[in-house]
Image 1 (cartoon, rainbow, N blue to C red):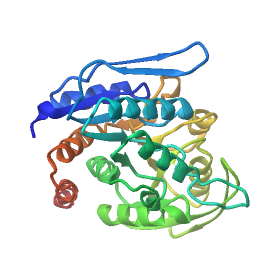
Image 2: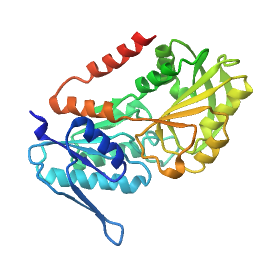
Image 3: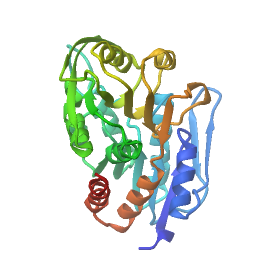
Image 4: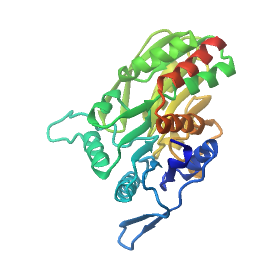
Length: 323
């Protein structure tokens, strides 16, 4: 199978990332018309034949989440009816992932619902980054490549040569991620004991571990309203931490995130471009790492049927050689 049988289509959510990926792949984006009727309904038409092709749709389900999700579903349906061989949803940020279990009576498990919607629409495989919890992979009956942004963050931090560093998880749920982060950076880790009385509301209870006099890197899968991160940074400062860095794969940055981050004692915030960053959300302390090279290589491996493990083995080996 040659690259001629590979098609890449961009939704509206993150066109700049799709264009960067297409440059790495050396192929043009397949033209696609996306319009909206007066009542808000979406219209999609693929403008060239995709019969017998492996088609990759690049579309995060970020804000506006429902609109971008519906657009993705319609694009998948259009490709299915156009006889595409494989329809791969490249969804760098998978929305609704935080609703992956019932906590209170009569709540939905929306992550499972979205998984069903994607497969029913025609998605035959999914590529994403840092799902909120890895168990979400079990909601799908199709193959999923849940890629990690960790090697990209670790490589960036190693280049900065930060001394006396400790990795901190903002909650117990992220402890495994922080532990792996600390292992790669060859440093210690600490944990913030957090309670969440309501959605988008956090309370810091305690810091477990030694952060006094140390530089800190807080690692999380996303920054939404930034309540957890900013409260954590303030508590870390009170416990004697020096410079504080934040690494988060998905910069959701819902209000009042920018205001909170602007006033927080954080030296640098490092995110990926899984979500398109609007101009009004940019900060001097914000650094964005591109996912395009890693996504392009992943997509090519999927297209050619090559193993994915070799890619990450190489990335982690390169990191080990820098230690």
